[in-house]
Image (cartoon, rainbow, N blue to C red; front, side, top):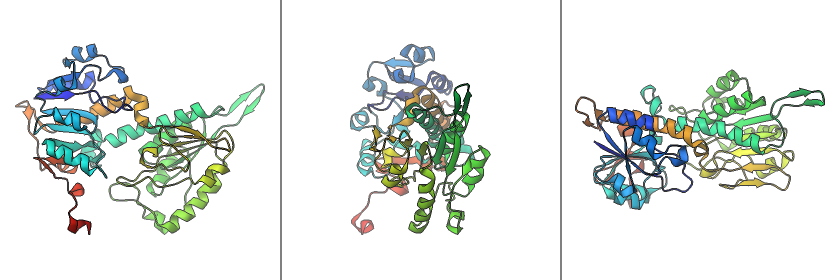
Length: 384
């Protein structure tokens, strides 16, 4: 059983799909691991660390991929990377499948069995494999750190001989994994924290962290969560009522962090241009959904924008990658935990249970075809 780990080709991607810790665990499963030279540098892992853990360091991606039964990546493989993969190889990565039909077809044509880690079901046995949670947790933390770096004042209340410094007012929009970590981080840094979410269960979670919950709590609000734990898209009427409440609240805030994402859809717009303009000069907004169109008007992917009224809108891309060492460590454990379910430990060989609920939920392509029911190629009939 040969496993390959290659350097990510995306210039913005600093994470790596294996660490020395997971290499040791993979070797214990009977695998030989080949890591492309330099793959871990951006995460603070040098080639010697991988070699000490039992991996072979390959000079190129092609050399690492040669004969590999399993390929571990952070992002979906590109066309050049697919050329180096043998047919039937298992490829585990964050695949970003929604709206990327051509990329899915390319993986199917290459004959690889691809698995989208972000489609992992949110069930108890899969918690240790949940890349969305592990990476969003770090994104929520980093969002507050980035906001503090851009904010020209201190966050906690400080009582000094020269006078009292008031605590920063911090508002977190969306109380999923990223939002809850943002709340916890903002509280630890001494801010006065409020938060909002359309899911009723979030109210108790927000309040348990010491923040105040802000929402229009009507009948629609009480039914605003899917069975999978995600937020439902709300009606236009509810959105209007919530926007009015939020607009008056935002005008008083020093820092706002937005985290709202719905899988497979553009990010919902939460903060209008008028709301941005209502904020005080020196205020900061961090948009964690900027890669999906953004929650904030005027936000620009990959930029920190200063508006005419002096508000900074932070739109960093790949926020988990801004904590590359930590995010790689968690992501690599997510990958190992999933791959471990596909290995016969007695025979020390791959033994994928294709009817396993985790496999069926994440498997995108196999045997030259797109097999996931949610991403089947559209025929003229289904399109109509």
